[in-house]
Image (tube, rainbow, N blue to C red):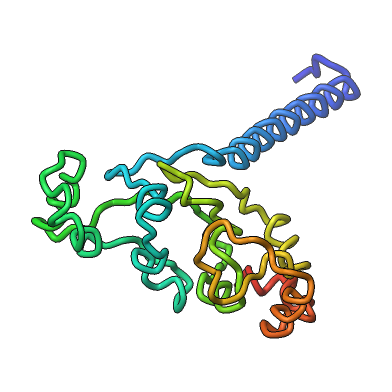
Length: 215
């Protein structure tokens, strides 16, 4: 078959189409990344039961560990079970319409389908227990939940955000007695130095190894 266009023109068209494809792909990836970075940040996440941390933590003073039972011992902090919720709400506001998911869960044995607020990709390993043991306060990652009528994410949870803390953990440490407290003042420089030594974090080289978070 006779070639319609010169080879040079055909090559130029192919290169132009390839460039156009790569540009479109780049735009799509950029938009996906932009959406991921902003998704959920400072936006309240709807829940099957409209749970208010402001009321339960800020007003009533319930400790984080009462609902998040494995936060000190496990990678996963744990979500409140129906039994935990009904410890109070079998008596308080027991007939309230908003608590119907709890009553249904108790009747069927199926857990309440809470929606995750802080979600990491499957290729990222995060352990709540070790962070608590080292003295990283809940508010450092989760923000002032005691002021949140509905819970939202305040931290980007991106790699550079995590690495910034791993490179210099000192400003994020608190005494063990204040890890679960909200609104505590940062410790003095002398106290910070003591906390770093107690947590064996004088060297942060291991904290920035890829295998620490990617296993």
